[in-house]
Amino acid sequence: MALKAVGALTLSAIRTRFRSSFREYVRGGIKGYLDNFENDVSNLIERWFWEAYVLGFVGAGGRGSPDSSIFWGNVYIDLESASKFAGDIRSGKYSSKGGLKEALDRVDLYVARLQYFFDLGFGLFTLDMRVWEIGGTEHHCEDCLRYQGQVHRYADWVKAGAIPKSHLLGCTGIACDCSLRPTTKPESGVLEGPRGR
Ligand SMILES: [Zn+2]
Image 1 (spheres, rainbow, N blue to C red):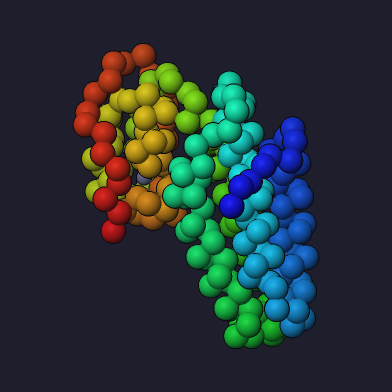
Image 2 (image 1 turned 180 degrees about the vertical axis):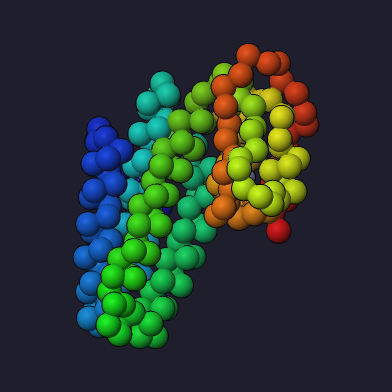
């Protein structure tokens, strides 16, 4: 599928549009309009996550179109989870009192992912060195521990799929508090993709 950037929106404008459309679909879905729900939500995620990704890429000085395989390698997890979300709505999980609010709160997990995709696009075109710093989480996964203190070009981290909060990490990124900080240190460590769980 070919995706094109819609135009020069800010990340916060992307967030607002994505959030309000997603919430509208969820409201409809809970009322029983589910025929196209999964498809609509998937398209919405693809469109706006791509937009955030391109915005990050362009913001870092990238020209043309960023690598789409890196985008798809990350977004598929969100599409899978959106399909589970549709299943939960269909099963009536959100039909009781308070259910709507719970479902709308779940939308915000996807809204938060826009920043991740922006960072991904930004990192892809950023050649300065970054060091992996472990966060304040009590238990770290093997991937984060292996990356701790390693120094590589930001773009190389991204290309390897080694990105803080990524679903691909052993910790699945949910509680990951690690970061890639700018550093003047030279490259160090052997960069491999995350091993996952
Ligand atoms: Zn981590």
